[in-house]
Amino acid sequence: MKVVYHFPAGLVALVLVLSTLVSIEIGHRLGRRWVARGHKHGEEEEATSLVKTTVMGLLGLLLAFSFSFSAERYDDRLKINWREANAIDTAYLRSAALTDGARVRVRQLFRQYIEARIEYATTPATDDRLVAIDVESERLQTELWHAAVDEAHRDPKDLTIALLLQSLNEVIDVAAEQRAARRNRVPITILMMLFVSTLFASALVGFSTKLKAVRNLPVWVIFAALVGIVIFTILDLDRPRQGLIRVDVDALLSVRAHMLRNE
Image 1 (cartoon, rainbow, N blue to C red):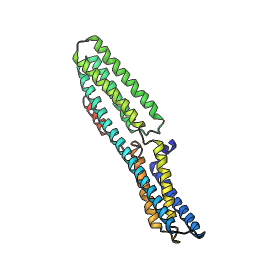
Image 2 (cartoon, rainbow, N blue to C red):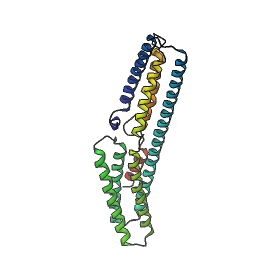
Image 3 (cartoon, rainbow, N blue to C red):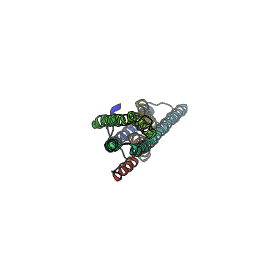
Image 4 (tube, helix red, strand yellow):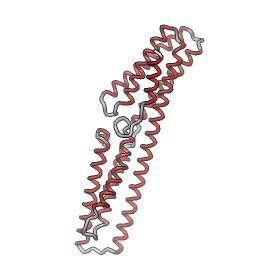
């Protein structure tokens, strides 16, 4: 099921909409056969209505839960982006206290690092370059840390170096949070339950129309389209670097602009 993340959210939603319509049609045909065999409708209709209401309620609950989960994760990623930008900018400003040679080296590393982080933030999770970008970020983190530690050894009592090390530590921590936030998606199990529940609910919608020979296509299409739109939004929120709803990198771009102004 992880292959779902390798396809555009719109394509997955479209396939689900078509599958929903097919499920409704299958349910309708099964219902018509049920009626043709002479089954009675009284208590049977009540049982069908009860099951349909229960399944539709479960589907609504799963949709609401999944949407809430995706929206919350999207908000977390947005906050982490701003925290990372602030951490990098603070560390960059504090590097001004270094000696001339060290300051030039550290600020050059920071400019390379911000470029790597912007690329990381804008690269889709399915892109093969992502691992290499992450490795490059870690390499630059290590070089920045070693440069600051060398300065600390030169003057252990310098408070500004201690503050720089603190800022660099936060930069590294937030980068780790960023990596974890990328992997924190709606669990595959929940998506499977969502897809299966949608198909079962659709079949019940079709089955409940067994007494009518004429298909109510407008209602069926509206139901399938609404479910498809909600699921598309859930999937799109879960792919902040490759969908319509993206986590912006304005904060990181602002930090890069600040660095360029202070070269």
